[in-house]
Image (spheres, rainbow, N blue to C red):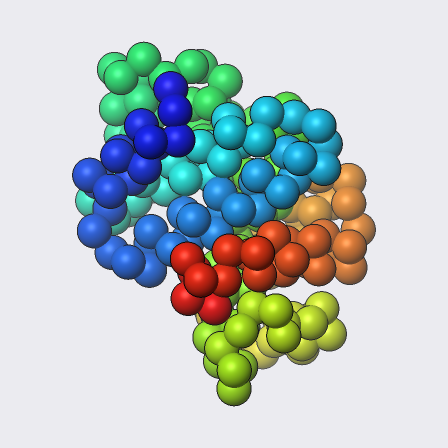
Length: 183
């Protein structure tokens, strides 16, 4: 399986530009962490691209990511990739065990939140987002209210990286993809 295969699936099942950008953001963060950990950058990137590819058409907890898992299984995607995607949602019952699984959970909600923070900055630039402003926005319950602050902090904790290090690392990863992400 290749990145092109993952992109094809994403684009086939996801029409929303904002949901595609979320996938690209999670891909960027996953690739950055894979490089940091000395793991397979391409594979981790594909997991980031595909983690929510079924969400637009199947957003309920009864369907997402179960429908996507079936699609991936039928297409012959490896078990460990499907398992990582299943583990990013607590309600699936799939526990996070591998570093790739823990990383996906750690970056998923954070990427969404960081994109929201960048969008409200005067320059709309991820490069100007700072940890301090992220912490301030986290306290504002009305800001990006759909994003779980608990999942963001728990993700870093499960990954074993202090939140104050995790956030800037992901900001840098997303800033490196600024043109593609529109931030």
